[in-house]
Amino acid sequence: MPKPAYLYSLPYEYYEKYKIRKYGFHGIAFRNMAKGVEKLLGRSFKEFKIVNMMLGIY
Image (tube, rainbow, N blue to C red; front, side, top):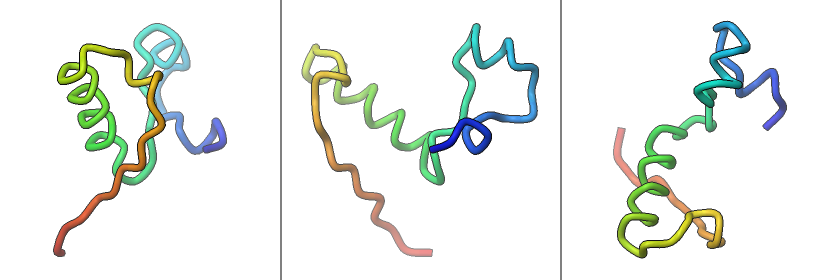
């Protein structure tokens, strides 16, 4: 994702200091899943290659 696409219209220091950014359309759900994997397995999410699918009905 290019930088202009994942940055919010907030001061750039928020991104640098707090890592506030977009992760794509389902970014919040993906990040929550990643944190759950870390907690469940006791390892960093960065150690894995994971395919995450969002299934649902609208």
